[in-house]
Length: 235
Ligand code: ATP
Image (cartoon, rainbow, N blue to C red; front, side, top):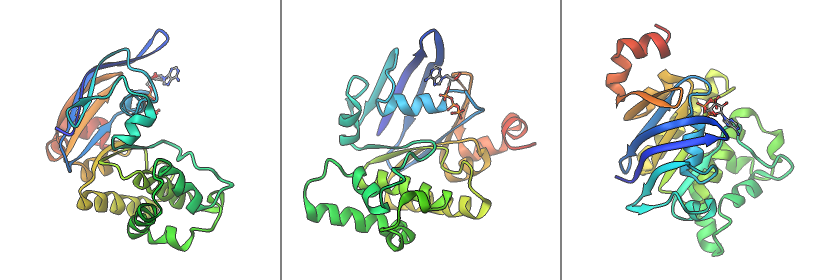
């Protein structure tokens, strides 16, 4: 397994947001975490990328334990995080925002290769590279956030609510890009409230309810599951 999370717990003071969940992501696969607001999805992604400290459990990546590493070491090991809300620097250009994703890269040629890879996935970002990030549409900003993650040359990309607030056309564009990530061989962990989109994109799904995994399985099975249909796919 590329990524393994075992019995992870996350607390915010006395609130237990994640109550001992386990999940695994195979190389080259896409997994999704679906669930209502506050179920703990974001907390799991943040614990994997070292942005919140787990209170117990273990996280293993490529056979190495990473839950005690600082966030920058976790990025360096090949885990990129695309946060909810995109978190761009609005007064910087698209190119500058992308450059930040590769802050560990000092070699100019390698850096140029990374830009070219991002522009292959996101031709629109090449067109807009000199534009200030705040002047882009929501969907384009999501592309910058995803492109910034690619700049770090990750093996796995953790994506938090990429479709949030986007119109249907842009959601379809983002979905296509996530598919192209998969074709390139990246592994993806996708957190989504749009469960039908998420299950269409993923190989494997986890249904999260108040900090616990209520159900897990192949996405195809979850799509056909009566409970999932009723609770998450609008009947
Ligand atoms: P959303 O889609 O709303 O982000 P989520 O499934 O990603 O939901 P989390 O954001 O992980 O859920 O939140 C899980 C629980 O932890 C919620 O009860 C939330 O209120 C709480 N929580 C999250 N972040 C904090 C924080 N910084 N301080 C205190 N409580 C928090």
